[in-house]
Length: 457
Image 1 (cartoon, helix red, strand yellow):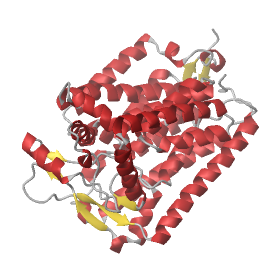
Image 2 (cartoon, rainbow, N blue to C red; image 1 turned 180 degrees about the vertical axis):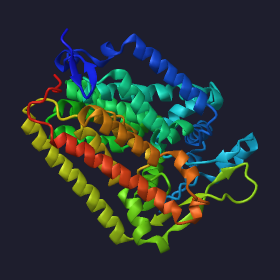
Image 3 (cartoon, rainbow, N blue to C red; image 1 turned 120 degrees about the vertical axis):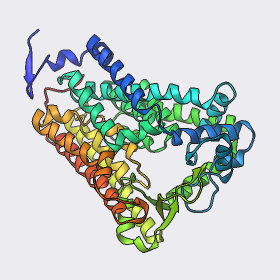
Image 4 (cartoon, rainbow, N blue to C red; image 1 turned 90 degrees about the vertical axis):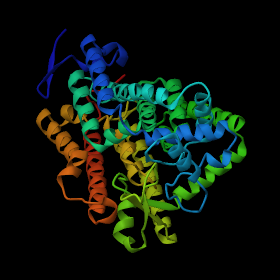
């Protein structure tokens, strides 16, 4: 087979590569590399606190015991990110020492967690998740590689992407906490890739399950409609409706009413933390700094007050209205843009870079965007090596990872982040980096010619 050279790397012609599903292009060396990365991740992160993952377990235990008032945090009109007080007492009594977070997932998953609490222990489930999560990160990178840079060396894509994720707060905090967002990211990337390949049933099903965990992936279905992927959107609606109905049957409507009330609290509140990379969080501490309220980190097994925490803002009406308008405008612009790109492409797959841009724009303009919400778009980041050249791509990836690295926090005098202005610097820096990377993805997408050698069938 004739070989081509792209950005200093030897590759095979794209047309032949993309004619096969991505699984067929995973070579034996890549499988060995994946196994090594999973093992390394387990060694590094197996001793994590898993506070986010533990929240699901505690919700499951409450559900199993019929204590439905202890599944979700109290509905107060604002979202302070506090768990039910009884959780702290029970975790302290069990010997756990560490942060305690609330459960803010649909009731279906409290029911699922409840089934596990009756047959196994938290430690067993957490250890399994510690293996599965890096595997899903790697799976997300492999799927993104097949869509965004099929000509690029697979091992290089995988290593550069995994290093970025695990050396930045994007992936580090998710692995350390066993964050369910890793599963959401994998399903989201799979949905995008399958839809672009024309496998609409798999795409719609994957997106429905992603949205059943976190609601914001549902925006992709709107973009599918704008781009003419009506079959994928239809499957999403059917499967999504079935999952919603199943949730109500299994968990009951009263618990869903509580869940919706908590979502209303989230919508009416802006959290300002070191890890909320959003325009809303940045605007809140720039405009309403004097009105922010400090919440001490809820801890189990603690003697004394926590020295760290986060701020929250009960959104003034004008701020809330502007935030909603910004998100609506962003979504409207994406709908128009996707429709125009679909017409320009004449039915062929959209420029791959438009998907990470869209996902990042939705997160940046949304009401709450944790660092790990960017996993799905940033598994596309290694495509920069292929699209803007190896040297420039590696420089961008390296600088981004360094500025988002947890190690950077140890090198600069941040002190007690919840009590100093440096807290706001970290939040603003993260938001600016996300915005810059989103702009770079958009530039790559718009510069893609109508006939491109990376067109996918």
